[in-house]
Length: 179
Image (cartoon, rainbow, N blue to C red; front, side, top):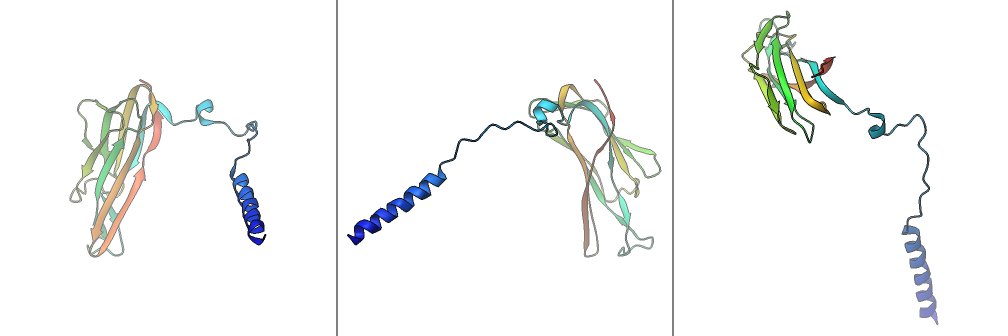
């Protein structure tokens, strides 16, 4: 009789456990006014073109520098990534400016299409200090239709003695550009 009660108790416990795992049918709730689904609101970062500013540093001052003027030379990589999974974007210009606002280099002679999900990069050598502390890029891009905004950033790295430096700077939209 005791094994029958044990079996019955175990069965009852299993029924309770498994019945609590069955999801109940959820009620459909109305979405509050202050919450807007992204697809319905059009708030995705979509554009047909932009001019963006990307801060870059070919040098920085440091109290740990081994140089007389306290500067450390840095390498800069500008990365442009097309985040649209269906469409190419057009890279119209990539301009590199020094800390005094002087145009130092134009990287693109002819605009080109950057395929969907593709990337391109431009490099400033650690030995090229022409940009100085306030170096920056202006990137102009466009698209033949509305696309997700590309991910554009500068990656800065350098070392001085046994100290390493690295960080990234995102692009800032300064102007929307139509086709």
